Image (cartoon, rainbow, N blue to C red):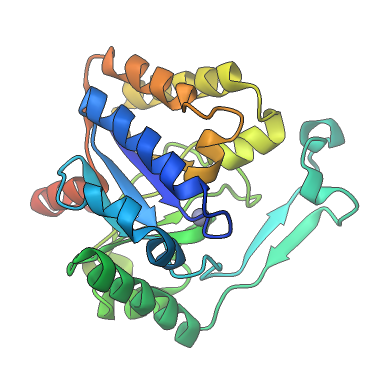
Length: 287
Ligand SMILES: [Zn+2]
């Protein structure tokens, strides 16, 4: 059966007004439709907005996991636009005047450990969450952490059991192909540590490339992606962000329209990332 896991990276500590606005809309929509989701929280957001997050603690519709402390890439990654026609990327303001190959350097293992443990401490001390097992790696990468076993070793030791780290194609961009499906890090010796790839488009990258005001186009893209998921019984870890979900769409009408559409489909299961992890573990689903 096809599955959709809604995941929201909640990360905009630089703009304190974003978190309460986003949380009020996302909680309203997911409660109205009784669709579960996972919020991947940046530690600095927890520090700044714990009172806004607290009402979601303990609600089974909201799975609260982490997205590092201050949102820096765990792994170096490359965005390579050579060979991509200029028209296709003309809207990408941050790319103008820069070379077509962009490299973002990843953190050291010591820095990664600090990023994860500080956020676990934030979850514990501000929200009473003791069992953080899930992590979305900032920015997400081609091949996830498959080529960095020393990072999965570290994360495993810190108690992390599922990661969303694979979220780019071979150019370091999107969409990430849907045939990249969840797998356990058995190749690293971690039989119970699951990669849950983020496929399709990061909402941020699609909107940057195709226009922030084009809410209809965004929803149409999501519907097309869902058709592919349903056709192949794929598992889709859906990614949207706090700040980008409300930019040019303060009511989150795009997300609402897509959830309404998804609920009308036959053969689609809605799960949080934690529940999906438990299910995958029980089924011993490995590749
Ligand atoms: Zn992020």
